[in-house]
Image (cartoon, rainbow, N blue to C red; front, side, top):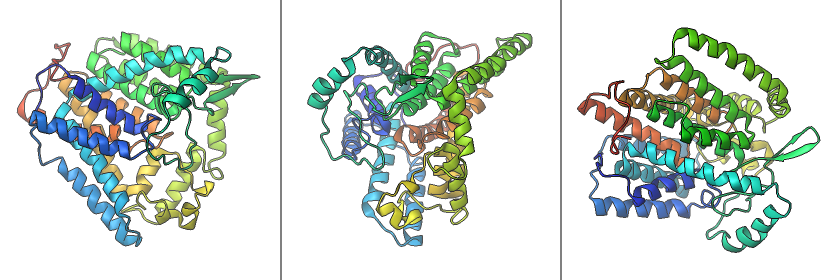
Length: 427
């Protein structure tokens, strides 16, 4: 990949926004046509810029293609459209990572930061009597009707104004009150929380600071999602920053830990919705496929039937007729075990290895303590435990960036800790 030296252009922002959009923004992600349009746009930009492409990242695409072919043979279920859709998705990521390079990280953070800022006033407006219904009836349903076919699957489409999704199921009952949750533009609040935490972790590495303007606003937006997994993930990021920050003395670290850990326990016990959700998920492990722990348990049971190549992305391979009729019993929502059951243990381990290497190499590149990569990686696993995210285009991008960082490390020395800022081409 050729690294750019110019400041980020509107086309680069548009391409990275496209990756985020097809990864989970309600207006876009349900229609495969948008992935095709993004692919065509990436091809056009690559041709205009005469972007140099490299061969090594194609190994990822080839490996997925061969694995899906093997699954098609194993389960006698060859569906060309499914394979083509996945190849286009990977090709989109491949092209955009060559066009944007490591600037993808900064572009992603900037976009999620702006998304957080936009979501907050709209979220506040939803508490104003009549405001939400006005926006739904007079804006969402008038100007933002679906353009292409929507694959709803088991999730109902919510009214959206592109920059915000009015998810009718995004609320928590706390005591006798109904409190709405902030979904941002994504399909549900938990998905918004995933993107916010990922941006916070990456921005912490970039800025070498957990507390900065962008992170504070994104944390505020995260608070409005009322996402249990989101709060747990942020706690992992905060603990990781605290333990790995060389500027903080050991005594100060210990003092912070003595404050943070009990505070987290008190918050957990006082926040009724968190305690109830976690305990309910655990108690329903063996009987409820809709809980995170229940999904994980059922996935691991089925994994024993095909541990090496998984069952593939076609639900019929695993559930048979129940998948055809979209029976609710096939619903799963644990992203970590979903990756295992979809592609098998070896491929999932390779995926997680590449994801970890991205964080480790990125920390090394910008001069941030590489031990933080462990916590950043764990934070993504925490997010993935409650959302099926690992086959999303934005997450796949970091696998390709791991290889890009390997190339850079082979060519140039890493940034020393003394350097506090990246150039536009490195950020």
